[in-house]
View (cartoon, one colour):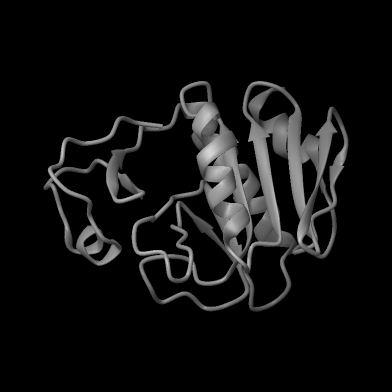
Amino acid sequence: MGKPVQQTESMTLAEFLRWDDGSDTRYELVNGELVAMNPPMAPHARLVAVIGVALERRLPRGCGVYAAGSAVLPGDNLNYRVPDLAVSCTPSREHWVEEPRLVVEILSRSTQKHDLTGKLAFYRSIPSVDEILLVRFDQRWCELWQRVGDNWSIKDHIGSAELPLRVTGSPIPLDEIYEPLGL
C-alpha cells in the first residue's frame, strides 16, 4: 500500500471521483483518505495478465474480467478500493465494477500486510463478493476464500493444485498461472 496523501479533511466518494491531481498516479480512497498506489513490479503485472486470461476463457457468457476495476461497498461513501482483478456477471457502467463476484489480489511484499487486513475485510463486506483469491507472485501458492452462508471457507492451493472457482466453468490449474513466470 502506498502512503496517505496529505489532505486537510476527509474526502467523499463523489469528491474522489471528481478529483484529479494532474498526474498518472493511481489512488484508492480509504476511510476518506487518499492513498497513492505503488506501481506493480513486472512479475506482479504479468501474473495479473495471465490470471485474467485464464479466468476469461472459463467464464460463462455474460461475465467479464476487469483489470484494476475498482470496488465499492453499497452505501459506503468513504471507500474506493482497487483489486488487481474482479469478475462480474453484471454489466458495469460506473467508475467501479458493479456486483463483483470474484476479487483477485496479487500479494507483494510492499502491500501484503494491507491486502491481508484492510482490503480483505473490505472485500468480504461486499454482499455480491462470493470468492476472494489471494495470489503470491514469488511462489506457487494461492489462498481461496469462498462465502458459505454468513461465514467464509479458506483453503490453500499449492504446487500443481487446481483452483475450484465457483464463477468459472472449470478449475484453473496453478501450472497455467505460474509456468509463464518460470515458477
